[in-house]
Image (tube, rainbow, N blue to C red; front, top):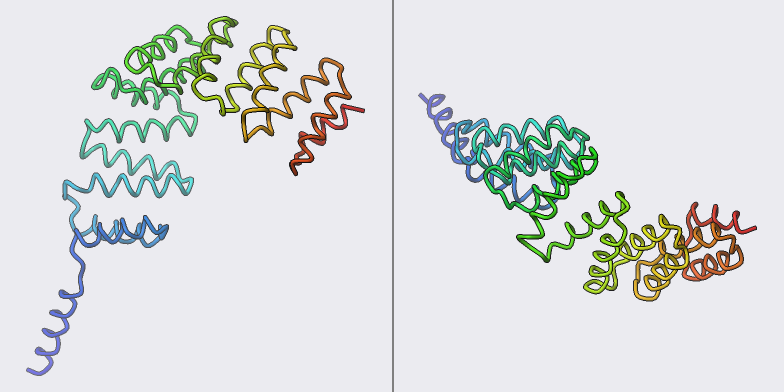
Length: 272
């Protein structure tokens, strides 16, 4: 009789200490936010084992996918996103996350399929249109890329990420005047963004307008804090123009800022 009483007491204690599904999910999320990913995986998996049919498992699978993606385990991340989507097939957010995973992994065909599904549901979804346009541009389907970029900008003229991507695409197709017009517009709006000056200089370099390319780089150096690449690009261009002493002076200015890189060392050697 005493043995039965002890066993009953133990079972009651275990039940009292057992965490509920909700508590396990909350604990897993807290652990994830603290960077305790191994513990978060354990908590989430316990929650899934406890209630495998819970409709909120979409959230659990999505968080597990995030963990595996950050760990570089793309296969496991894909599995988790797919399980989440099986619970909520219409979730454009989940489709976007899985599409981005595919794109990062170089599987543009699968990424495109997810972006297409999003755009079918939300024709003006800017993120899906942007990445679909990127894929089209990479595959040299430029007209399709233009269509998506124009669609983004017609709905949101302030989407500077799309405007910049469009400028770069114009540059690739040697539509230089159109490209430079967009670059100038971006510089007017964001005068401290180095990549816009670099892009402008590259377009002028492609046209062999080297002096105009230098103008872009000098303006960027003057206005941008993150100007190291601007100095390097200027030195490289000056070497190309056979102005080695000016190139060395440019590198010296960068050196006085305390910057050093292998590229910088290689450029110094070309100044001899």
